[in-house]
Length: 454
Image 1 (cartoon, helix red, strand yellow):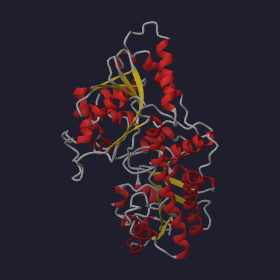
Image 2 (spheres, helix red, strand yellow; image 1 turned 135 degrees about the vertical axis):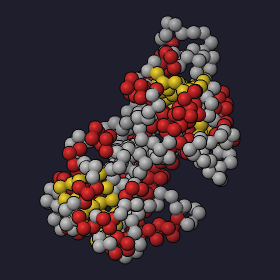
Image 3 (tube, rainbow, N blue to C red; image 1 turned 90 degrees about the vertical axis):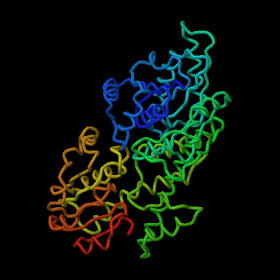
């Protein structure tokens, strides 16, 4: 099939490259010429394990351009994967989606094209995009005869750092449209993934238990709500584990054991029960806020989702409070933060807990040193006020430190020779913000070990 993907951000790039790998003819359009040039050269503008390898394997079926006129004509499917940042009131800012829809409409020429909202958009956006497409198409003086199109929703469920596997070997595929023909087209597009009939990439093995992938084919509004409901539930699960973790610290219980005992219940499951400094990234914060804003349009409160957000924000403050409890005075103290990206295996800094923790420490008069094995370059560009505190040297970070906080559980930190650094610190205090270090081992090495929920 001929596919166009509008936007080469995290979702758009993963979608386009994966579909090209499966054998579809894919053109990705992005207005950023520098990004397009980079992708044409086989270089990935984001850090995502395996993406450049997949780019190479998919290259015979993949084109990058800045021109809608080159990308849209003849397409069976057009994915719109542009950014939808939060507006001041919490609702998504849809200006980029509107612009993309108008541009798509001015180049449609196929007998039937499915225009797919791949961006996470508010419930009802499918109808809104459909209206924009039809209004914009009607204004074209050159509009060809016999052109038909319909809007569908195909939400993504990608984990940054694991995006390729989540695309090719997903838990499920959700498609939604009020047009039966659109559902048929998307069913055909995804058939290789649904039936798992493709050969896996050379660098990524198919999971042994992956046979067929469930397809949820539903109406437009239900598909849109599935995305928000899923992300809000995962955010809630993390916040619940963190709230129980604070109680565990008061009563002397081990939250990691509590979470393990809970997770073995098949009705609950172990994933997303890890206590720590809380979730960040581009999805959970934005989507929970959007869900609350959407409900408000219908005079509904979302107290559970609101509580999940409140607990998550509190975790970042608790990390600073733990340091203050141990050090008594933060002014003048040197504190190192290990990890800046919101999670391992990505350089994404959006809503990263490390940013709030660093700013809070600085506001209290502490001196900070920051380190990340991958996100440093992006951090310098996106966080110029914090960039002077960044170091590429762990020796420099640990030297004369009064405390070190493990914020992001990068493998490099878990595998660190911690015995090498204990003697460099003025006060060998380690605050484990992710409950991933062996506390007993750290104490044997001479550290004072404290967990954020312990």
